[in-house]
Structures are given as C-alpha cells and as structure tokens.
Length: 358
Image 1 (cartoon, one colour):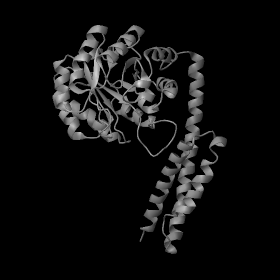
Image 2 (spheres, helix red, strand yellow):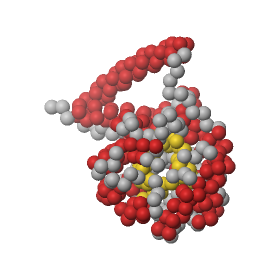
Image 3 (tube, one colour):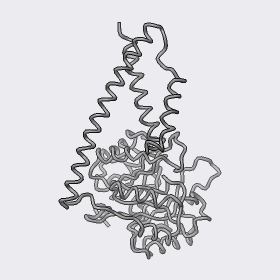
Image 4 (tube, one colour):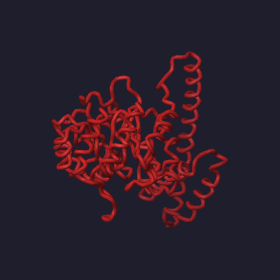
C-alpha cells in the first residue's frame, strides 16, 4: 500500500484497532483475525516496545514480535503499525515489511528521540502517527510534526492522534480530552488526518462509546482503539481494551455526521443561531473589559495602601461560589474553573501593570 492511501479520498472514518500489546503469537493472531472479519477495520495496531512508568511492568515482547506482526498482516491482508521509541525500532519495522509507526505520548515530549526517529523514517515510505505529548504542550506536538517534515517525510504520510492529556483535573476520564488543543493542531496542519484515541482518553471500556461519538461529532477523521481477544487477561491496559465483537457493536453505534448541509431551512436556522452567538460573544467581552477596568481600580487602591496583589482567600471564595452554581448555570465545573483561572490571571496582569506605574 502506498502512503497516500492512509486516508483514501472519501474514506471516513479511518478505523485502526488491535491490542495494546502483542503478548503472544496466538493472542495477536486471534485478535487480528477477529478484527479483520468485522470488515470495518482499516489498519491493525499492536505494541511491541512499551515505555512503562515502573520497570517491573510488562514492557512488551520486543523484537521477537516483529515477525508476528508481519504474519498477522499476511494472514488478514490488512496493514499494520506499531509504536517506536528509537531508531533501531524503525529499522526492525522496515526489515519486517510493516506499514507504519506511531510515536507515543512519552516519546513526543523528547525532541531528541523524535529527531532520531524522523531521520530513520525519512525516505522509507512508512506512515507516521504522532500522538500528543502527555502534558498539554501544543508546541511539542507541533514540533514533532515539523521534525518529520524537515527530515523529508511528506505530510501525506503523517497523521495526528489525540489521546488526551495528563492534567490536575481528577475526573471520570483517565486523560483530559482538552479538545481545543486538537482543534489548534488541525488549524496548524489542516491537511493531516486527525484521529481520536478514546482508549487512552477514557482509561476504561465503559466510556468508550461516549467519547468515540464525541470525536465523531467534532469531525475527527477516525479512531484508534485498543481491542484484545481476552481483555481482562491483558498484560497492559486491561481495563480500556474491548473484544473485537464489542468493537463491532461500538462502531455500529456511532453516527458519523456530514460536515455541512445545503438544506435551505438548515442554513437559515444555523445563520440565525450564529448571529445570536456573535452578539452574545460581543456582550461577554464588553463585560470582561469592564471587569478589568474595575481590577485596575483595585490595583491602584492596593498600591496606595501597600497591599499585595494576590488575595488567595478572597479568590478561593469567588471560585467556590461560582463553581457551586454549575448545575444552575448548566456549565461543567471544569469549564467554570478554566474560565475563572483565565479571568484571574488577566486580572493579576492588570493589577501588576497598575502597581508598576510611576
């Protein structure tokens, strides 16, 4: 298969599935053959080298699994990709005729490793799937794409994978989606396929359907999902993997909507709603401007009375009061905290400038 067929024209969604790790020849073949029979999986995936937090965790079968992946490809007729974290991994992938690699979140954070892998991939024709870094640093994600570009890897061979971010928000998902960062990457690289990894966003199989549908609603180009013939016995990420049969049901339950509609009633209604939003946005930012002018006055009062800018107890009370209204406002607590943090930071900047005035 040629690199240009990674996301064939008109093919949406692109579905990549397979076990978190290739644990044995039998487990890999059983899983991949079941996935192939679904008829809706475009690429297979399986990890061989697993960068784990603890040294006593299962770190993958390593090089011996390369021949298993090559045989799984031959048995199913489907292309296959695996994670790489070093140039020697890429060399093994090429020797065994695999189709592509993905760069994991723990590797994306290291520009030296990304450069090493990019140089090894250059000229090979391998597809490259680049996951976002573990923490919400959009520049590292963009920088990884640019390193592959500058090494000579065409954009036609590259795709983005959004797997969520590790943040201080402790909620029901393993990793915070922070969808807006994925949208920022799409704005920067509009020609690259954008895939969602609901397995790593969720961390548990019960929420996969919800997050996968959200990705479809947000116009992602496809999904990469972990599937295992016996998930409960998996040696890594057991809770977030599902059987091929369950994957088939999940995919059947997703609605992939059109990006637009030319229906006249739809166009008129949407235009009216957008006009209303534009007006509300204007009012919101007018109010924020007024709020910051009040913050300026507070800064002058504090300066005249030799009082420090940051008043932690006061701000904690404000946050608590507003977040407590989340149900009434029909806004999530996470959203309210994010907005309040942004307002508070801007307010501190304003007061700081006032404090520095001669």
